Image 1 (cartoon, chains in turn green, red):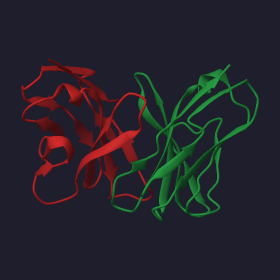
Image 2 (cartoon, chains in turn blue, green):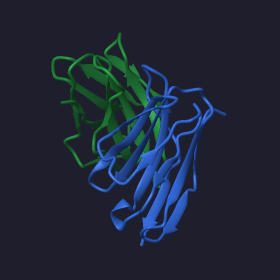
Image 3 (cartoon, helix red, strand yellow):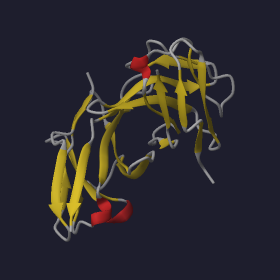
Image 4 (cartoon, one colour):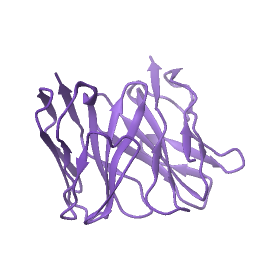
Length: 111
Length: 115
């Protein structure tokens, strides 16, 4: 089944403790992206990648890192999480000229 | 700058009545337009897209959308609403005229269908 898989689905962590949210797609898509969803703000892009080793900042990149060492994987790294990064995160992938396929989301709480 | 506007935070409609969820966009080149739906505790699911061709696009679950270039709109419609259509709907635009990969979402419209 074609899909984007994110892990974990739920995560509660403490301020400053590094964490990684994994994302993997099995559709051989070139483009991958991370979004965060907050009430009243909709979906905001954090980072995106156009291919292996090619990444760029989205609208809200501060406090996040990404890497794209393999085509299928696009992990999101929070080096020192803060409470304002409490949010619902989505990974998505796409081919050129098409829409996104989204993962099921990761609900992150930073206390 | 590119943007997508969904002017209504919430749309209320009675079951069986037609529904419309509005979307307008602003891009520098030719747009690819999309509608997604999000059910509680779920990811976004693709509903339909406009790339080129017929201005009326049909999608999943009986939804359709009409592309209007002069009004820069892409409203989502359904002839007869179901209670199960209640969800959060997002319009999105991808600008294919520029460099890079720009995919912008509206802030979402909550659809509430009452029995």
